[in-house]
Length: 441
Ligand code: SAH
Ligand code: SF4
Image 1 (spheres, protein in one colour):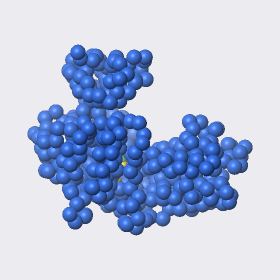
Image 2 (cartoon, helix red, strand yellow):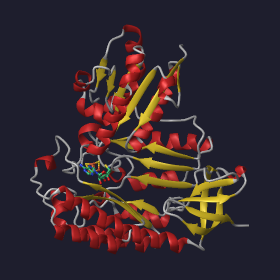
Image 3 (tube, rainbow, N blue to C red):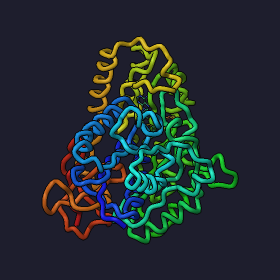
Image 4 (cartoon, helix red, strand yellow):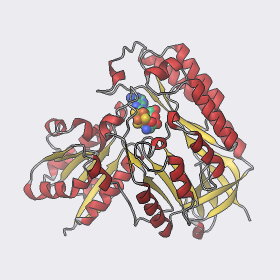
């Protein structure tokens, strides 16, 4: 055992968040404790995202900031993991002479050994091999121990969809479902430790189990999770519209613990572009799914991801996305200007729309969505909502915070011992990123 410190920065999606939790656990086991300031660290790690150029530049920017630190302190170990590491591999060591180690998305478990090697032998190392199915099945992150009322549980990894713009299948590898028995065991353990809400995560949870004989479907899995004592709430992300089965839609009417919120990325409202994106559904089919969801569960709220400026997208295509937003009335969207990714098929498509035009469309879309979102939040004022209290709020002393079934943060005055409980709160004020309320009774 040694007594060393590490500093970890995490970029990107829930998959990286979960991988980072695993990194923390593994490093603790070899005597490294986590610190909040890079200056105090003997080891600095960046867990990176490659989904858009902006995320990549941000990670490189952060890496560059550590260069002078490494020059002052040559024993400092600098490492990069996650999706950029997976995509660039050895190249990173060639490009950044001050980088010591590079680990891919399938190699997190190797980190302790790699760190020890660098520390003891002063070598630089890289591991970015994809693993075979059997090994991956053994390595699904399963987490216990941390104090929290809400937790992510990995149900599947990788993606086989190959949407034409997306790097994920290349950096996360093939889709693989985790055995349901293991998932349920983890959730039972979490419940026993006091966890009240689980979010089942994967790049495309709707296709869970489909490729494994005898495995539960995702709807079947949800039903089993719903039966776990002690769990009050279930969420899941992300959903691919093409795999949203009727069975799964019906879960929103049937399963009392399933939150009434679904993130259902549409990406675009135009059929031409959806086809070029290789999304596997049409605008009409998507709208039909939305309608069925609302029939089954009238209170359901939807959020989405949108890409603006895909190669070949015209103003008419863009208008279709705008009209879809007006039709669906998402409570929230995450919108992105298209970013070409090396190795994806869209990267080779002709893209003649000037950047200024894309930016202007992007702004127009935000404005429309902003108005739709504002209307939903404001209509919440005066309603009573059930909140799962997560802890003390940062907004002020004596304030607690939690989330509604729709995943909105609600702050309210209340005693600290409400943490982990479901309470009723009257909403008194709506802000852009949260609601304010008063405890009922
Ligand atoms: N597996 C999830 C999320 C994948 S990445 C899903 O299928 O929904 C998260 C979001 O990033 C995507 O939904 C998409 O809107 C966006 N995205 C992915 N690749 C992109 C690219 N090349 N340019 C811009 N946005 C992109
Ligand atoms: Fe990317 Fe499409 Fe897979 Fe989502 S479903 S991760 S957007 S390839």
